[in-house]
Length: 149
Image 1: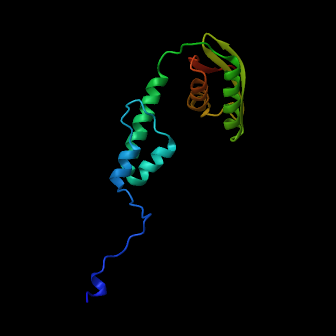
Image 2: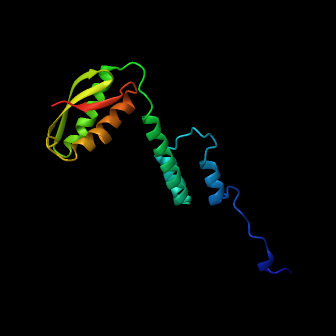
């Protein structure tokens, strides 16, 4: 009589074989050089390899900045510009600032910073890094944003 310790351990029929980290990483990575990873994809990659996720995020950020330096072309939809300014307004209002749309002149959106933004030493940075980036991402035809006093 064979001992019970020699008997094979039965496996459930629906047993899942968990992929290794390397296999999961290979599934997450995209071979298309123009692929832009979403936040969810980067988070999943970060769980496996934090350094790789950081390098991918940095590369994407630099590519987006370089793409932002391309000359503006295409039509400018004033309604979309106004929507983007309103979105920027919501962001600035969190710190007591405000912004209003003034006009579009030669691909430059003219706005007026108000509230806490007036006289704030960071207002020039906010105008460039928040307002201009937001508007240019929504309306590619815009070349820049300028504050009108």
